[in-house]
Image (tube, rainbow, N blue to C red; front, side, top):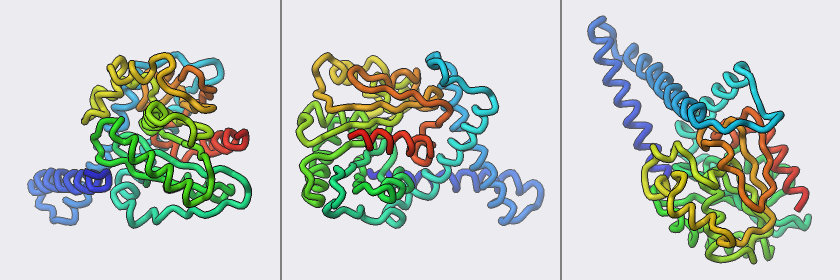
Length: 304
């Protein structure tokens, strides 16, 4: 099953559930369908607010002490929660269910500025729609940007390696470049490392990961599918991926949020051999829209 299909089904099922609940509640008051629909939408907002609240509760339960300069207060924490909730609504209600209609094809061609192309790789239960804003921002900054969707949703992470390998070759053929830069969000960083483990770094000039659980995440215990189980801290798959010398890394950067609400403990994003950049007060899904992530990403790309 693709992520688009999954999210359309979940969206429809969620609304029907809340509509039936709303009808049950409003029937006693003699209200009509319009009020039931309104109540269903309110319940949907409340339900999603609860889901994001659960991720923050997990983050607090398994928090890693942030490095100096990355601590935030309750006011910044509240704003982070609201931005993360907004990103959740936008991505899972509008963009990813209807990615095919909203994203359009990647705009690739022969680059005249000598820059290497970028390939953006999304995370768990997402699709290329995750990059709907970041792709445009990077293109406006002068970069050739490609994306892909990893299917099926609940797959072995190693099962994504060959689709990624094919997309890499397509991007290189379209742009005339010999190498490219991989940018992986969350599980996308693990997929990138799985590719490097199998195919080596000959085609990859640089790897940048955003909030990737290189050592796993406790929240993955709630995940579905083989890929969810592989991201549980201490899994056999992670042990093999993190074994000394298992993955030939190109120059690698790990950007992560010290208050990440999906990757916990947050220092799971620390990766041996990589340049690690801790950031403060940025939600996991929010990374797709964060001006700070964009600024840091462009700074790292400029160093290539």
